[in-house]
Length: 470
Image (cartoon, rainbow, N blue to C red; front, side, top):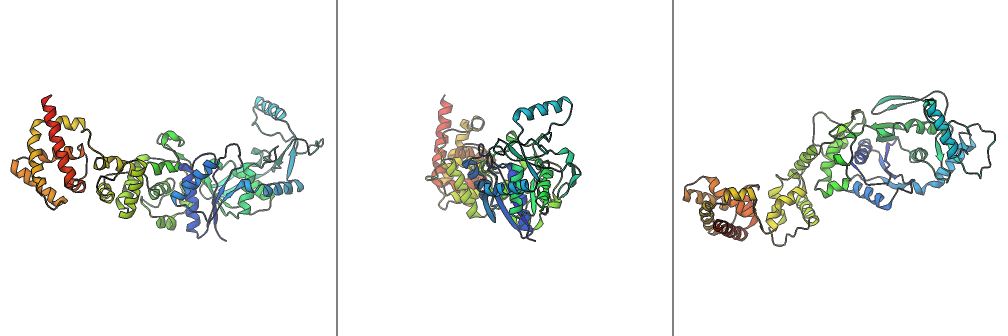
């Protein structure tokens, strides 16, 4: 048997974190088993489904590298098949036409609630003898078994059993002739020969209904694996306020797809204490049996740390390409600055995201129009003029501009003035970068270049002189 899994999003919005985790687990299991991964777009809700959402989902899957072996397959292109299976169930008396009006259904529910009963369809048309003409408005309902239980061994939760008395007769075709979600899912999974249904645990209540339809169609059941929900750090279901934004928003925020995948795989699955996984390791080690039953907490700080680890180890060419992309999206021109590759290499150990890398690197590409106010107030006093002028003189004499020669020039200034290293280095750092936070000063100035460094030293001296006269 060839293992076949599927990811079946509804195109009513973007691909969010929970959907991406589901897609990843389904994809990993298929790859781990040497199987196939199917992408199905469940777009039967035509009022809410949009082309923009379809594209957003496809873009997210592409960025994450979760390529489908089949698909995308759209449910709206399969209406003839759903209609055919509906007619088959009707002909076998496994489904029936329901002519109850909205008013009749509402009155029935109100009566049930008044009697403290669970609101559900009362089965009036199940064995109705005064059946109206089939041309009259009606829905088609599945004839759910009235006795017994629905049982399945969930790959995550273990044995689950639901009494059929808890289920009512599900509508499988609406009055307008369109099929409903639970029915389409069953037909699709059977036609596409899905062997393992991996999805969120919010679908557990749908599963017994779907299983009964599968039994009615004489089908072999797939293995179900329901994934616990992802929680915010407050223990509540993940939402936008926790950071449950579009997967593509993480790209815009400067995250690497491999880092996000690595983080998502640890939300509900583990392999010992290992935190970092290559894609090959994920495929080799993943197991549905190792998925936790409890909800996992989404922690942005942990994601940031992991992304920083990936940035540190990224091959130079990929690092530069990602940095260029982030600079372009931020509208930063690099035409008059140092090479992007040299800046990226310098900043890779400091940035947790590429957006942060851009922010931390702006002083390389934009003129210094101001200094960090607190740093300048404390360090740009008239006494700083002496070390700044002295270090400029030493730096202007350097003929082979490099981190080593810059460091030697600073050391020479320290020895000449007989002061501590910080008395020279701190005002020099502020003068060249605008603040007190940067990579190693000698490496920073080496990348910045001699001409820019000397020009900024002149500007700092002028700033201190002008400030002193006020």
